[in-house]
Image (cartoon, rainbow, N blue to C red):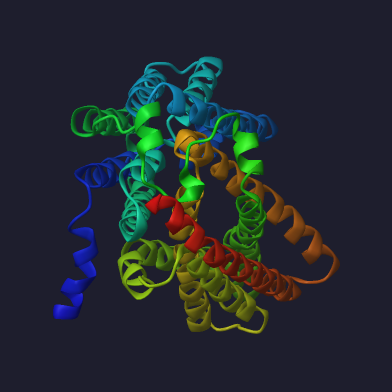
Length: 417
């Protein structure tokens, strides 16, 4: 019992804003009803051509990324709260209006507009957490945010499925309502955390978090380790994209007609672990820095995905899922921490907006590479390749960890000065 209590100790002394973000994120993702069913809604409820739907979904994703990148700049210039309140509110209004029209063109326009407006506020939560935390507290805060994300996503699609089949209008009303609630929580309970120019200059942060003049690209070029980190993270997300692409092909080959049920159960294992395990992993890796934790995550990826080269039984697929899920948690939670530790205080919004794009890049490239690899070899051989690049990424990340360790002493001297 005492050991269990110790797990919660790091979460007791976080800034109040972190807890507000936790609840706001759960509510927001719990009500993320439209996105998971967008393809199904446009195809079966509206009756659009599948080819047209594919284009709409692609455009919808693209405008969201563009908005997120531009939103990062606005977050650094205008403020965290203002951007969140303005763009989340207008995004919710656009979704709300979808409930009152059946015109395919108007519906599609409103859905894309909502995603575009919402994209501007995507980097806000991570930026606020970066503003108000540091050190071990920052790692714990991002772990809490990751749990909130997965708790919401675990339950949200189930509610969305029920609403889609029985109360379609509430698919939009519920999505808008939960977004409004999250806006209210941020508006009334989280203060503006964007530091002024004078405050930025006075901040006692490590050398890499010192304010910079110039653009995002100029600040990024001055941080070569962050450029290498970006490359490594793309590899990791190419690997992680196989939980959806490669794994589904393997399950189909092994289990045939039972594949949908089996695949769904593995996704449930993943979702439950991502909602519960982060606090345990945070405690276990408390003494590890973010880069070393990410390197360890790569080993779990290599083991969990690599073992699918030779397994056939359902229990082993569960074990495999549990192993690569641990890797997912270690990499996802510590990626935000690493970015925060290497981002100039003047560019936090912009840096937090660019890495979701890098994640998307990995998810776009991953299935293409895997598809070509499977075409000329086999689904089994894919896992040897995935395991191999996971080990490569882990080695590169460990090398980056050694580089960062050498610079740490310099950073401590800078803080003292």
